[in-house]
Figure (cartoon, helix red, strand yellow):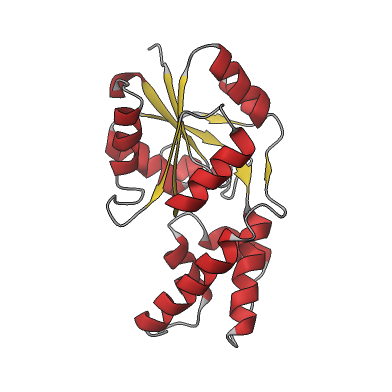
Length: 211
């Protein structure tokens, strides 16, 4: 199979965003009188959208209205603090530059809110990524395949020539639901064991291995 479309997850795959996510989350939790969370806890909570991150960070049985309120506070804090400590993983820029020069179509699909996904893509990857899609009210988040289908449509690509690259069980399931190949990365927010247990047949240890 000759792939010409490479679709990437963002957090834990292209960018190490964990410190900024943790800092913004804890700033809001502390401000609102809740217990703060460790970096390892946040690592386990991310991947299924910011509301899920907030819900898991709050005490069990927190009222849904309160979850919504804290989520909005987090969104406001994070949108102003999403580039403090966030960095591309080693080798990512070189990989994306290679794909661009080799005329591959590239996209990001993420469960992070859409404005943050687009801002991070513009800031860190400039013209190296063709399409960036995040969570909105109009499109179901991963593991639903909708963001993948949207990306393929915007790229005017063929689903049979697309592969999804990601670091989590959510990404593996998204690829399965979309009917495309999946490549797991071992440097992200989940372990190799989690990827294997969720059906990842191919796992790479450095961005360069994707080539």
